[in-house]
Image (cartoon, rainbow, N blue to C red):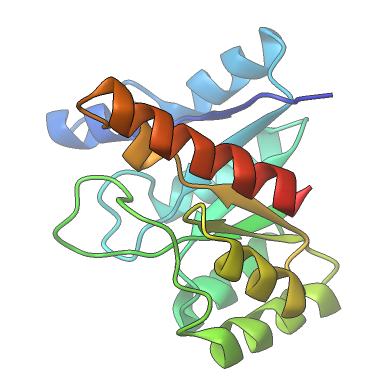
Length: 181
């Protein structure tokens, strides 16, 4: 059965743009859970452009379903995640100039580093997901190094300009999901 996790990052984006305390991503998370969401996802970025450390700490206290922390697999973020103990972490790539995550993590390129990071979380009983492009080699490598699951990047599909391009990208996503499952 598919489960719905709500990402409340951009509630925090609006708050940070306004340089105030509202809207509150914590209130949004509570409302999402009350409405039936199976989990809450937040991305604590290294540049703290939307979700702040305080948000993460409070979310850990108030989220009753599942808290999924998206994060770069850096030493700083790993230490924060280990101290907060989300229900799951999802490794994502980060580029300072991007507005939102634009592509999947290249697991093949960073295989040894990501493997060590996964082992660290396994020791803490925290499942690890990896946000990757719909590429079978990436999925195979994610499985090989111990990822519990993968999140498939559908960005190219959603940004397709033509029906043909959309069909090609949809097939990539479909094949990736079948392969991962």
